[in-house]
Length: 229
Image 1 (spheres, rainbow, N blue to C red):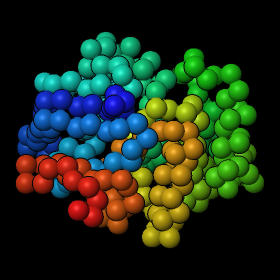
Image 2 (tube, helix red, strand yellow):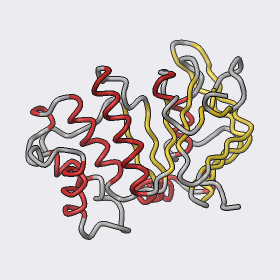
Image 3 (spheres, rainbow, N blue to C red):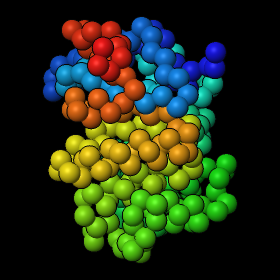
């Protein structure tokens, strides 16, 4: 049996929001290499928090997180930053694109902090944008792109270094229905092309249905279950 791409054990994380204390408590989560898993749960259940624990942006109050064979929770802050740059791609609902840069430059910047594939970053960025249908928009700033086109640029930036894991936080939440369907298909197909495992937070059951399985977070939610089961 191959080791999991993502392993979370006995994780506990508490945070305060809106004057209330919330808690994520996850006894165990295993995600196999190449698997695509959706996270669902009510607001405050910890979907984004779990993504940030897996990506090393947060550390748990208890438990451990292992990603691509590395125990992220055993790393110091600088080492977590390096690990994230080398092995994790992020796709957010708000795309965090830089309007002072072109679409191509935004994607190329995604490779600026990794040593593994820095050489050839521009060529990979251009090829990826062309595959995503943005060959005529390479030198446009984000402000001259539609929301759907901006989502594609953000996806290309997240995948330009062939990460082991792609973390997606409501990636279709800002899109209309037609654009959301296109972007979701691109997310799954593009991640498969680079061999990335996908962990995606969503509130939309139709989005979750496109994944291999769904994990429900929150005390009232059922345990992890296969989609459609």
